[in-house]
Image (cartoon, rainbow over all chains, first blue to last red; front, side, top):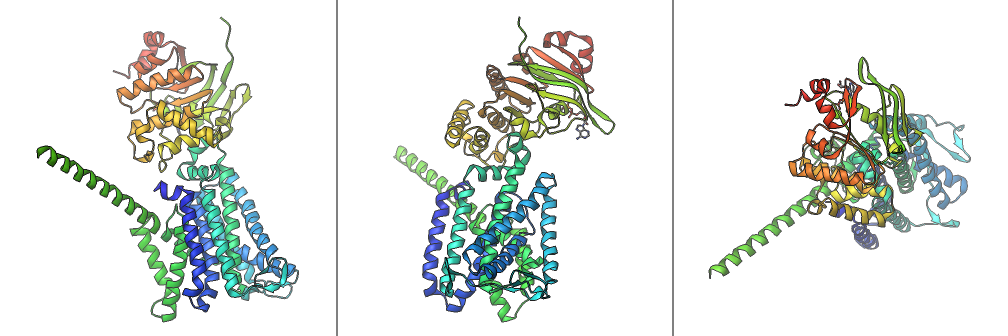
Length: 348
Length: 240
Ligand SMILES: Nc1ncnc2c1ncn2[C@@H]1O[C@H](COP(=O)(O)OP(=O)(O)OP(=O)(O)O)[C@@H](O)[C@H]1O
Ligand SMILES: [Mg+2]
């Protein structure tokens, strides 16, 4: 198992497949699906960020979507005010990471337990939810961007860097968002192989041991918390660009729960698992929803229960384990056969 | 004989849990390159004293001074960050990671990637952990886990080593190996070793501190302590 997740080469292989998928997508999917994909990519970046902070850092952040939402709002407001998307993307990531740094500082340096962090982030997300819903008057504006309360605010499309007049077409937007997903994935995959990432994993395994080795665990937890919040913010950008607007729903309980479901289904301790789970579950619930056969929330809840009970380590780790077992079995079978052959020979 | 430098010192150190006086007014000194054993019956306060030294507990009163730096109530990572190697009584490992990764994480605190890799390899060889170097430590036998934890201590090349019951649950062979290892560590570092095993203590240490009900009762060689009637009664009497 270590091999599969520990190697940066594995990350690069997966990233190359993703590049191939990106290039082939226009000839596989209908135009409408390509447009939808941009927002799903945004959601999958959110899943990636939670996979990093929870699966590798061991910090369970129930309200990861708070940073996702902050990213989406910050992008929309900044892009309207600046009149361009490139700087706004950076501002969105920075806003989410800064907010996480402040919040994380109080939690980690205040020696609050990890359970508190889970509860606090969720609470913050829900507070933002109700706050943003109350911003419907014309007095609630930042620069020239109205916050729009319940209905949310419009999110400007991406444009060519340095030329705010040249808007990107949907297909180009899809390419850019896939590019961002792949970059974020490669970055996270690289991060977990560095000293920083490995120490974060050791904190997940045993925090006391890590500090007895002389590492200031608070600093590392704050670090991975802030980085993952920045990534979640990036996810928020592509989500709102895909939807063309952002509403307070990004801060809702449902949004927070979804992110956790993706990581549980995809598997903790892997980065690609939750990303894939996001795509699969999104299109699964979308097609179920359009057939109106079942309540999609019920289906999602059912999937969650099944995974927690039957596949608690998630899909990707379970597959990896299965392959490992098979290899070991094959190996021992080979060995047996060789031994038998040798015996035959010596008898003959 | 010239007096060596004192590397660790406690002054009137006390640790109370509610009404329980787990450590009471302990004045303790450890000299450079000294190897000291702490003994005492169950519940004597050895581990509590140990945890006050390692920053896992913040003492109720008194002081901990390491190399003339006041360290009372400081965080564990600050104390370890002085170059102190620590092994707790309860095994403390990264259960989901391999033996090698466990050692590497300890070495990497002090050295760059390259040097950490070299030190890890050397330690694997030195402790004969080759066969289990890729095994997940959560799946190892108790004695092996103890060895890995000792490895994590020595791979960092600490100048002061604190070990709480390093030989507990080991086979005779492993105990023997550990005793040799501790003596080897002692050629470059000072050590405090909490132990129960009499033969083990005789094999490694000249000076022994006897704890009883949170206080230091005696401080002498094992031979003198085992000859003392009071010490025999409270401690050795427990041992058949
Ligand atoms: N966290 C705690 N809360 C309350 N009481 C404690 C705590 N830790 C230790 N004690 C008490 O302090 C006393 C000393 O315990 P300690 O673990 O230091 O003994 P010890 O000498 O290490 O014993 P052993 O040889 O069994 O390891 C005991 O009476 C114990 O019950
Ligand atoms: Mg003890």
